Amino acid sequence: MATISLPLFPLSTVLFPDGVLPLQVFEARYLDMVSRCLTEDTPFGVVLLTQGHEVRTRTTEPERFVEGGTLATVCDTAATTPGLLQVVCRGGARFEVKSSQQRLNGLWMAEVELVEDDHPVRIPSELQGASDALDRVLASLHDVPQERWPVQPPFRLEDCGWVANRWCELLPLPNSQKHNMLMLDNPVIRLELLHDVLDEHGLITS
Image (cartoon, rainbow, N blue to C red):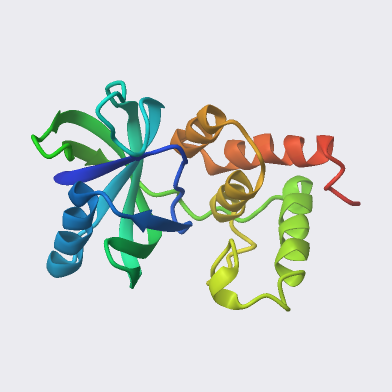
């Protein structure tokens, strides 16, 4: 797969392909990053923090993060307050970090290798309950403005990877577990694991 250079945004969350990520950006390093991404029509990378904090201070411990993440493309921005940028991003391809270096302004730059996208796999009958449960969640949103939906169309309720990724976002799983799910190569296994969690919580109906 291709290797590319891109800026990283370490966060205390895991972004999945086709996922929606709203951000409030106010640090100079990330305001500049978003501006450049918009100007050059390029993505940045979202990686899960394992040490440190999203906002840097003089006493903050060094940032450490996992060596895998997801490309994020800026879809919308709004400057409602001076120095504060509201940003909405969409998840793209997964990647593995091959090397990274922090610039003087605090921005991380990395060489990453893109991970192959999930192959489309129709949901087998024994896992259909996970798709049906997600369909019920989506149906419950009809009175909520679409821009506030946690899942954005197009909906692919017949696809193992897409359904599994949406449940990874919606369920209150530990971030470490979400990251492991993200990097799983097999979307069927990912959905099997999520199906078990849903079943344990009584969300699968026959």
